[in-house]
Image 1 (cartoon, rainbow, N blue to C red):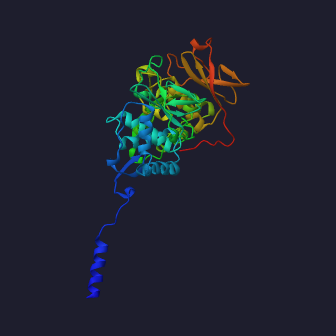
Image 2 (tube, helix red, strand yellow):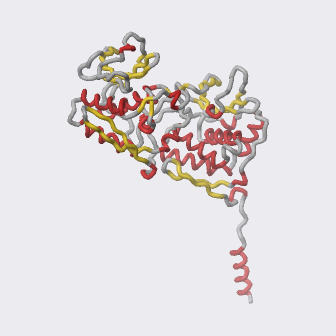
Length: 408
């Protein structure tokens, strides 16, 4: 009899569910792909915090405090894990934060809450960021010491901050509409944000599409099937205008690089350096149509080399970026970028100058015009309309003995 009682007691103990703590309640799993890598975290949609207007310091402090708890720790940890494993540049990491916030609190459902979640996640992963609010709008700033154009910056406590969400408004008159910085001591972080892109993600090869490019050189037709990934365009949708050094040194993704650079190297292998650079100049000049940014995008936009390959049309700054990248990868020659009032072009330093030369810091550079013109300009010939026009050297590239640029 005693044995039967013990057995019944054991059955009861093993079938009664354990008492769960508040942080142990089962949550739904959110998972998605980001640039070819899986991202996954547990999140209970029932814990989605609402934001109660108005936009004031107390209401934002209360919102931050309400989500700064263990329920959101798996999300922050997933972001930190991704950052530690894949080491994305800051701009690409911010795109991951945007996508994560979209899964938690969709932008279309509640823009203010979506922005507050982005701010929370950015500060929780170490970045120095703050909010500035007017009566009904919120601007999201991150500390950055770099030169960034066509978006607002703000000095706060002697430090420069760049606005990350200005593209969502664009019609703000800062003289009429005043924005007040919000102080949330718990959100304090120290990391500065950089817009430099040193490496693109390891996208899945299955995500690439082929694009046919062709041009004629010395009466020979050259055809290329370049692999391009539309995700690159998405990643750079709201990328601001950065300085020329940052723009020109954005690399190609691995699949795009391998579909183009080895073939270009093969085509110029038997050419002299001067003829090989001429070949690259004419590829950049004639494999794409020309169009100004204002007509193409509605505003100034400096494309990376891979974006220039992707779009059917591009302007002079975009051609300079692509030509610069090709010459650097294949010949690694010194170059300078020349900015005129209405044009940007590039010059290359050869062993001996070709044609008209540009003297800069004691070295002579030969102009290589990568943008189509009314006349067929050879290496060393500048547009006639620019010969008496003032210019500025906005970037100088000097090859290093041990080039530490990351290769795809």
